[in-house]
Length: 215
Image (cartoon, rainbow, N blue to C red; front, side, top):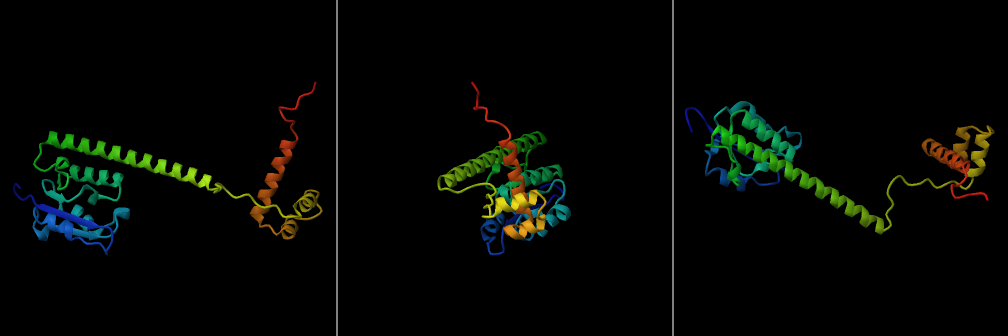
């Protein structure tokens, strides 16, 4: 540490029920306990009071920030990458205890640049891998559900027994749409949805099948 440069530590857990002791025990080996900032809340929206105070009021260029794991910086790869980049741009040295290879403390500007590039590439790889894993799981889940008979998409409305008669009367102007809804027991959206389906079927019936040929 040179001049007035300071050393801080940051620890967080995602809920008040979780314990910070594991992280604090490790951080105390590197940082004075008075300079360890903690948060006990989710990284959602990243509005954590401790971290925001650390970043906006305490850390200065040349300072060093110790964290036990890289994921303490954010709730996902995108957030971690953003926070890591902003800390580096501030001139803060980031020391990741569990992954010292990715730490920028005591490194030259060239080394910091290379490490940052390595971190960003790692994040991009992990994020893409996670995205593909989620897509694969979704596809497997859908296929499994289809085999069990699960139907996807908007369920088809069951036609009321008197639909054909009421629809014909409505089309001919004998009754209003409101009266037709009352007679069929259909809600407005369901009624007009069935009307659209009925019109679509009528249009299809107007065209002969491409397989119907005349000698």
